[in-house]
Length: 237
Image (tube, rainbow, N blue to C red; front, top):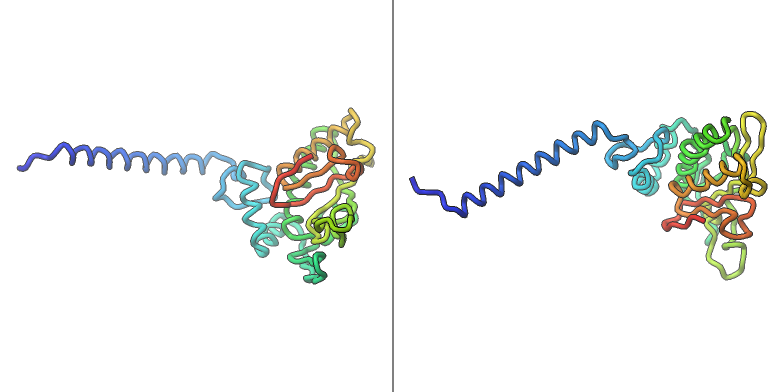
């Protein structure tokens, strides 16, 4: 029998190590899939009923690119969704818009589906738990100042279009609790009270869901509301 060369033995050993590494990796993935929360695993389905996790941002981005998947995610989360017609009006055109159920007041404003999905996640996984933990109450209503407005940023001539011009932004003014208390951004945001800490907490939580979150800390134009929109860049102030 011809003796095996040292090179062949080394190559065989290398392949053995490679195979063992692949098997170990597969076993590790199986273990992670079994024990890690679904919200932390990019290959697991998204759900509005899951807390915000390590993979949530990536899942939201993928769903936002697929109008059908966006509507499915809202409906699977228990929300009613009504499609809205496309509006062609220059830079104030709107597409992929819906009216979705929730706690917003006025109810079910027109907004893009990705915006509606992110708002629903924020309402369910940020606002609701923060109210329970900090105020011992449920939020029964979220007051807003609108979603769609055909204007540039701050309404200044020559500025770029606002995200509101595409119904892709939402301005939150306050919250109504089950015990009748009303919390407002204008009055409570800067107060060293449970209500003030709640508003700041939901602002911070919004930064994990939306691309842009602007609060009274940003400028005087946002003194009475939280501006939320799913822009493709990050700004949290």
